[in-house]
Amino acid sequence: MNPVPERFAGKTVLVTGAGTGFGAEIAVRAAQEGADVAVHYRSSRAGAEATAERVTALGRKAFVVQADIAGHDRIKRLADEVWSHFGRLDVAVNNVGDVAREQMSWRDLTEESVDHVLAVDIKGTLLCTHEFGARMLAQEGGGAIVNIGSTVVVRGSARAPQYAAAKYGIIGLTKSYAHAFAPTVRVNVFAPGFIETQSTLDRQDWKDGRGDVLRKATPLGRIPGPEELAGTALFLATEDANHITGGFLVADGGYNMIGA
Amino acid sequence: MRTTWDFTGTRALVAGAGGIGATVARALAGAGAAVVVLDVDKDRLEGIAEGVTEGAAEGVTGLVADLTSADACRGAVDDALQLLGGLDVFVHAVGVNDRRPVLETPDEVWERLLAVNLNSAFWLGRAVGTVMVPRGYGRIVYLSSVSGLLAHKDHAPYAATKGGVNQLMRVMAREWAADGVTVNAVAPGYTETDLTREYLARPGVRASLESLVPAGRLGRPEDLTGPTLFLASAESAFVTGQVLYADGGRTLV
Image (cartoon, rainbow over all chains, first blue to last red; front, side, top):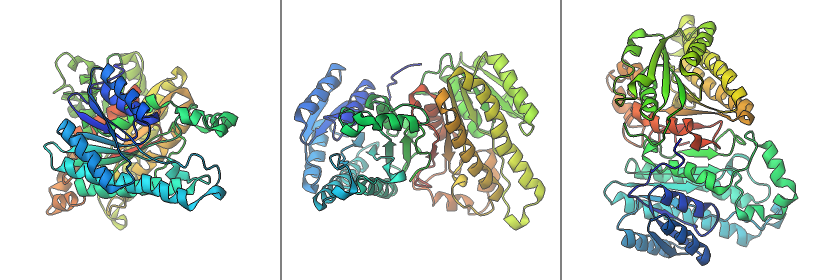
């Protein structure tokens, strides 16, 4: 079987938070499938440049763009820069998120962290969807938006309740914009379970056995790296998914078998 | 026919030669798979290879089978195995409907819908799993329905069978995951097929159904090929136990 199809030949794809982890792999996979890629970052400049190098090494064009998506004016500027650079945008993957990684228990919750997580995950994703979608609606051929959610919505998070709340918010805004933009722009949530990104592998609890516990609890018996799930996330942005909108696709090895 | 995935060398069994089953079977064949299609209706199977890319048409074989019988399901899977030499993909696209209020649904309607839609899902799925599990690889896709989730009036037996298929799918996914077999469902909304033609022609029905779909139109069998082939491909390796709604936003789940 062909390992990498050409689902994005001639397309332009923006991935937010593409300097590291899952976002970087989605950007590279889109390029492998033929896309020119806008690589967004907030603070990981070196990471974004490394991602862009991987994109150009594949013979595709890369455009590195910085923005803090916690503010509407900066999201508008981000959208303006991407549209003026590429002329159009076919696919936006809103991958930026704050999982409150440093917080190990609900007892350590701070108001500052709640505000920040909600501002980045809900307000940021909502306004990105709003701005990118509005511009896609105005262009020939529309577009597709994939918001990166999480299976944390199924069971909640005793560690970081603000993270689970934020990812639930992403579902609500996705359904709303799916309605608002149909049928020209499709909006869906891709919800991975645990992914072994470098920052997951570096976590103390992961090293102390949490990874092994989760592997055992996962019916498919393993936790994938980000490159394995990148193509699955991008499925929602392809023509193959042309009648899927407002949807929620889980890729978690069967760990959670119910949706939100 | 444009397809994303290369299924060359893949052996696929498709149960049901209605609008969706036939379209998916042709898409699989067009992507290079060898396909056996099961249906009780010989006439539907006769045209099954029509429209398949030249050169791939001989890859589609129709087999007549009464899928309401456990023995016939077992026998049909055996026959398909003989023809294909193995089995990598199984798509269950069997479904009949009979729209009546609960209080006006006779025993025979309930029993027929359960037999065709749900019994065949279990019997065929179990027979296919018997082959795939020891081999350590398989992709199973059930065509479910938004009726497995939403409460449509006059759809009690159909909704019960599709809800049943969803749960059957999840438990199979759980039991077979360790053996490399993924089991998922694709759930269409109202789709223009033989199954819905008469209903959609009733006064006001089409417009009322369309108004409930954010995409503004009813489904077409082709809408289901992308999601089904994705779940039938090696690419979806980490997706199992899921219902993927391809319904133009009807359910928004």
